[in-house]
Image 1 (cartoon, rainbow, N blue to C red):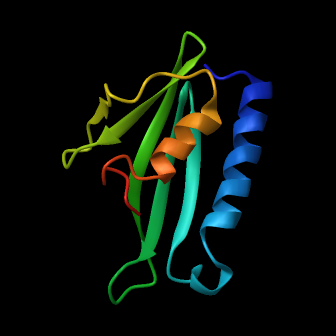
Image 2: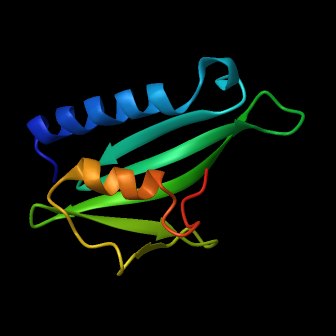
Length: 110
């Protein structure tokens, strides 16, 4: 479970990241958002559905804190999350977010 202080810190980091990542002129075509549940932080994008007013949610990555270290996960086509072994756990959330932002060999391109 993420404590209140860490949750507030992560929210601030991700709010700033999203603000900088998505230019204002494309926000009606692409949204970036996140959820925090238990010990998991899920980063996702939303795009308008074809010929509909609805938005389609596409998960990008999930960060899980375990023993004070953040691990990065990717989601397969069956919506199952998998740990990425070659991304070392880190106590610094921003380090893990940077790895995802850089794409990690095309795994997190968005």
